[in-house]
Length: 297
Image (tube, rainbow, N blue to C red; front, side, top):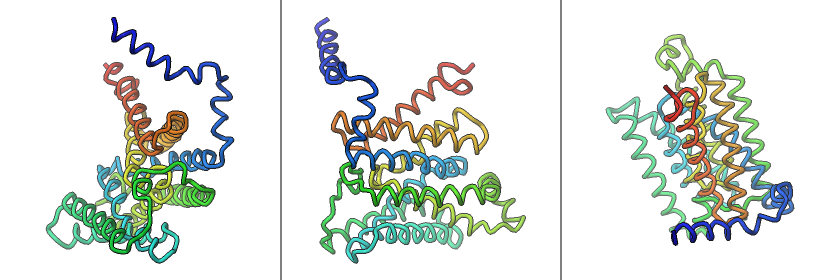
C-alpha cells in the first residue's frame, strides 16, 4: 500500500505543472522559442525521410546497413570540421566511400556482406574519433553523437528541408526501379537495370538522410528513426508504397512526442525520440489488426 501511495504521489508531482495549463497552450508554448521551432520542423522532416528510406532497407533485410552508415560518416565530418567546410559535404563523401568499400568487398572477395559491414562500421567510426582527437577539433561530441536540441539552427532546418525534397523526389521518380531492385536484385540485373548504380543511389539516400537528421537525433541514434517506424509500418500494411506513407506518419509522430518530452522534461532530444519510436512500435506489435500479439488470430 505504501509503495502504491508513493507511486501515485510521484506521478501527481510529475504532471502537476501541466494540470492547470490548457492543452492548446501546452502544445503551442514550445513554438515561442526559435530553437524549438527549428527542432520541431527538422524533427518532422527527419520523421518523414528516415522511414521512407528505411522501408527499402527493411524489405531488403539490410537494416544493419543503416547502423553502419551512421558510423561511417564520422571521418568525413571530422575532416570537414578541421577544414572549416560544411560538415554535410564531408559526411556525404565518407558515407558513399564506405558504401563503395562494402560493395567492393562483397563482390571482389570471399568476405560476406555482414562481415564487410561490421568491419567497415567499426573502422570508420574509430578513424573518426581518432581524427577528432589528433586534429584537436573542438566539438561537442556528446551532442554530435546523441543529438542536441539547443543546437538546431535555421540553417539545419533549411538543409533538412532541401535534403528531404531531393530524396523524396528521387524515390518518386525511380520508384519502379527501386521496387524491382528491392524485391528481385537478380531479376533486375538480368533485365539490364544498373543494379550497382541503384545500390549506390540508395546508399546516397541513406547518407543524406543521416545528414538531415543528425543535429536533432545525433549520428548514432538516427538508425532508430530509420528502422523503427518502418518495422512498425511493416506490421500494419503489405504494400511498399503504403509502408512508406505509414512509416513516415509514425516517424513524424515519434519525433513530435520525443521533442515535446525533451522540452518539458529536460531530456536529450535524440534518446527521447528513440524511446518514442520504441513505444509506438510496441503498441503496434501488441495491437496490430493483422499481426498484433494480442489481436491477431
